[in-house]
Amino acid sequence: MTLHSLPRPLCLFVLLSAVLPASAAITTSAPTYHIYADAETDFDLPPYNEYNGGFDQSSNLTQSNAVNYDYSNTYRGEHHFAINIFSAANQASAHESVNVTFLTPAQGSPSDYTKMIGTGYATVTINDLIVNGPASPANVTTSLHMHLDGTLAASTALNTGSPGMSSDTSISATLVYGSNTIGSGTLSASSSNGSAPTTSSTGWLSNFTGNQDIVSSPFSVPVNTLFSVTFTLSITSQAILNGDDAGLAQTYADFGNTFSFATDSPVFDLPTGYTANSPSANLIANQYILLPEPTSLSLLAVASIYPLRRPKKSPR
Image 1 (cartoon, rainbow, N blue to C red):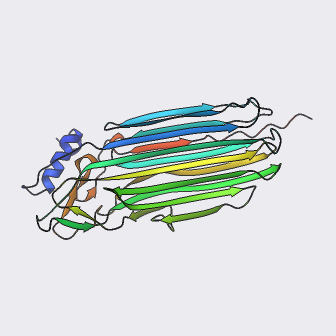
Image 2 (image 1 turned 180 degrees about the vertical axis):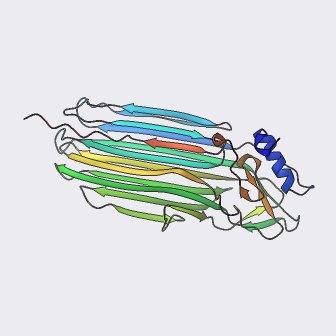
Image 3 (image 1 turned 30 degrees about the horizontal axis):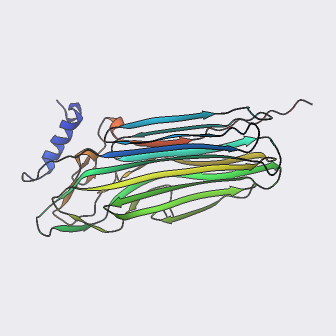
């Protein structure tokens, strides 16, 4: 029998037993997951239909849900409005994408407006982290290495109409220990009325390259005692047009690859003689291990507004 053929809980037990000292207890506590999605439309045009749908749920068990919205060709001219948001949660990594595309002919007057917003986030709390080492000192100072992979963009193309078209998207990645935020940062992109997009970044996402490890601020943890950390990845994206605008407003934020513990380095910076483990998060001897079952390795929160078709030209 190979290690990969063992059931996942037994596989983790065998791995942890091999790397922990005999005096160390193997303790696990279920993680908690929180997923959220919200799709909103606001049409200041007849028939003035608006939509607000989503979900907000949390559990110690794997989470999955979806909301879908499609309101195509309900106004003057051909157009396509659709929102799809999907969220799922399990284990110790976060994935999220939000795409907004709004392509439409002129619908009304400059005082009318149309707005579409998609929001999604996923939160994971790992409750069975432990730093094993000598009993004294009682605490050690460490930093935690995470990994983030993704891109974002915003664009507009105003063909005709009054200047009132905009698109923007932003992502936020945070890491909390106890009541203290030990890592946080944002990325954003925006465009209006055909202008070149502008981007900005803050915190540990400053100068983000699109695929890199990010490191928390130093913090103190107890030795040989369970503790928890919580991390959240969220995205909000929207497009707005005046009623007489014809053109394209689009945002794109794809962070579907991962926000997780680092996979190519030790997760915690620790002194010699110490290591870190978490059975529920596949953290073994301070390394984030990807076990064979892919469904146990991802926390998904995907919010997307699907691409829209170009309007057909009216026959002459």
